Image 1 (cartoon, helix red, strand yellow):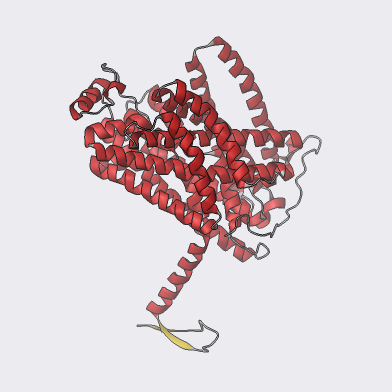
Image 2: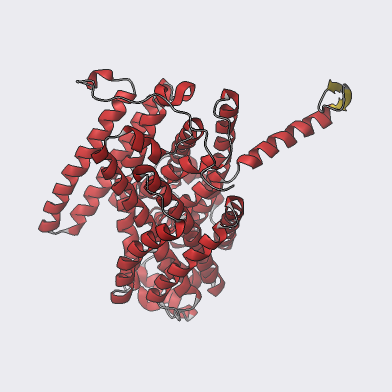
Length: 524
C-alpha cells in the first residue's frame, strides 16, 4: 500500500497511515458531519407522504397507468430545489421564512399572507384527519365508525406533544420509524402485485403520455399540487435552525448548506420511491378495470364492501378507502390491513409537522408565541369540525372526496410560499454571498410562473365542475382578489430579482442582512 504521512491528532507529530486508513477516516468524518445535520430533511419529506399524496398516487395509477410517473419525478425534483432555497434562507440568515416576511412586507400584506399559509396548514391537517379516520375504520373492519376515527385523532396528537418533550432528535427518530413503516407497507404491496419493471422505468423517464385526455391532464396537475406543499417551505426554513451554526464563518455556513442539501436529497429520494410503490401497484392491478369487474371480484372474495362498486362498465374510480378495499378483494385481507397501516403511518407522521409549521408561521408573522399544546388544539379543532360533520352526516365517499377539494386548496396557496422564498433568497442585502445567481433567478421565476399557471388551470377546472351560477360569481370575486395579491407579491419579487425600474417611487426598501446567531429554534 501507498503510505501517507498525516498529522491527525494533537498527540502525534508524524504518523504513517495506509491509504485505506486515510480513506476510512475521511469517509467516517463525512458521515459524522452528515449525521449531525440529518433530521430536518426527513421531517420535511413527510409532507411528500401525507394522505393527500397517497390518494393522488393511487388515482394516478388507476387513471393513467404508469404514464404519469415522470410527472411525479419532475414534481419531486422541483420540490427538492425549492426545499434547498428554504434551507439556505434559514442557515444563512438565522431567520425562517415567516420571520423574514414579517420583517420585509408591510402590515396588511403580511396579515393576508399569514392567513393564506394558515389556510394551507389547516387543509393539510384535515387530510391527515381523513387519512387516520379511514385507516382506523379499515383496521377495525368497520367497528370503528368514521366519526369515531376522526375523534381519535384529537388524542393521538397529544401523544406526539408528549414525545416532543424528550427533544427533537428523539422525535426525528420516531418519524424515521414511521417513514420506515410506510416504506415496508407500500413496499409489500409493490412486491405482492409485482408490476412490470420495464413499464415502471418507461413511465418514469419517458416524458410522454400517449392516448391521454382531460382526465389524465387533470391528474398530472393534481400530482404537482399534492407534492409541492406551501407550508413545507416555511417548515424547512425553520427546522434547519435546530443545528448550531456559526453564521459569521462563511466556510461553516457553506458546509451546512451542502450537508442539508445532501440530506434533503436522500429523504426525498426515499419519499419518491414510496410514492412510486403506490402508483405502480394501482397502475399494474387496476388500470382499465371497470366497476363491474371489481365488484364481481369482491363478491367472489366474500368482501363486505362489494356494494361500493356499482354494477356498470364505467372505469374504476378509487380513493384511499376504496384503494384498501380493492387490494383486499384482489390480493387477500393481508393486503388491506397492511395498506391501512401505511395510511395510518402517513396520517400520524404528517400530524406533528403540521403542528410545527403552524407554530413557526404564527410566531414568525405575528410575533405571537403560543405553546405547542395551544397551537395544536386550535389547528386540530378547526380541522376536525368540518371533517366530523361530513363523517357523521355523509358517507365515506364524501369524506374521501374532500381530499380532492383540499388538494385544490393546497395548490391555490402555493404562490404564497414560492414567491416569497424566491424573493428573499435573491436579495444580496439579506443573503450576502449566498444570494441566488442569475440562473437560479431565471429558473425560479419560470418555475413559479409554471406552477401558478398549472394551479390556475386546476382551480378553473374544479370551479366549472361545480355547475352553479352563484358559486361562479363568488369564485370570480375571490379569483380577482387572489390574483391581485399574487401580482403584488410578484411585483416585490421582480424588484428583488433586479428589475428596479418597477420601483416607481422608491417605496420598496429591503433592510440589510442581520445574521441572527441565536439559540436553536428547537431543543436539539
